[in-house]
Length: 193
Image 1 (cartoon, one colour):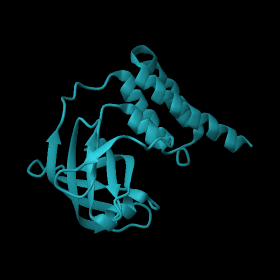
Image 2 (cartoon, rainbow, N blue to C red; image 1 turned 90 degrees about the vertical axis):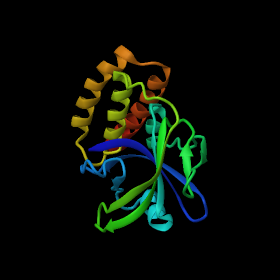
Image 3 (cartoon, rainbow, N blue to C red; image 1 turned 30 degrees about the horizontal axis):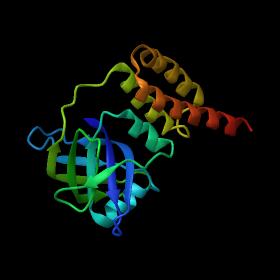
């Protein structure tokens, strides 16, 4: 299973890096929730930091602006110190898991970083995503793959996602959506120049 999280890593100087990332959770029922696989693409600050510090924080967040913001250059989100590792936690996280790197399966494109949970904290209840929040998350994933997926497919997906957005969005979702649509428009201008 893959969970969409905000992964925060930091280098040995303590500089935090915030990145939205799908994290794989162990399918084994005995270790589910304790074992994670993080698969950052090369080159990646997340990869470099995890290899350097051997720790990360997985943040479970319902504010989709963080996902969209990180993909559109807005990475200045309030943080607080992790509790058991040297790391940072997203202030708006509903829950977080602090992990340590256990094993690496190297790969030229996307190494697999196997991590184990050392501490998990619930901060607030998760009340679920509405359709607009889900639309923003899916659009953010599409934006992260602009150079991998044909533009026509991305635009068709965005058109479908817009339906749920328009029916259920609040101000946060509309703000996040706007950031993502600006990236698409800028990309279209760039490739047509």
